[in-house]
Image 1 (cartoon, helix red, strand yellow):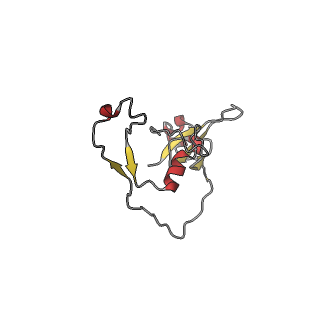
Image 2 (cartoon, rainbow, N blue to C red):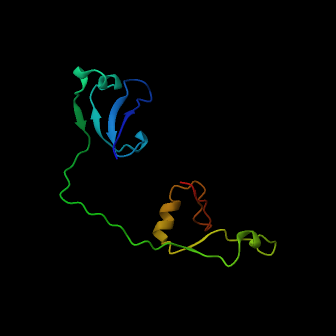
Image 3 (cartoon, rainbow, N blue to C red):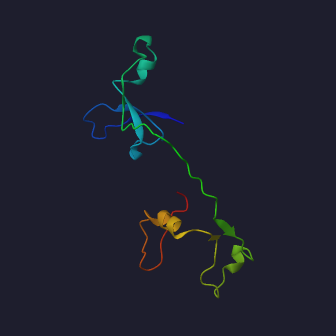
Length: 129
């Protein structure tokens, strides 16, 4: 899908700019078209249905390939329910165990985690995205 939205001028030094992007967020900077001098009211007036557009960072692709690796991650089934593992004799109960996560995938999941401490072997991970 493509998204039409306004990239805000956050310091309010100029007008916001209408852009077309492949993602719904202006913070990622992935817009590829800027609409020149376009405001929503232009859609209501037939004389202003046209505008100039500027293509941003456009390069013609000579070829395009998509690599979709075979899924290799699996959830390991536990032998008993989680609540039964919550005992004093078991200081580290396992809520969810996953098998097949490569070091590269683990590093990318933890790359921007603020609580990561690689030297200790412990890291916080955002499970909700």
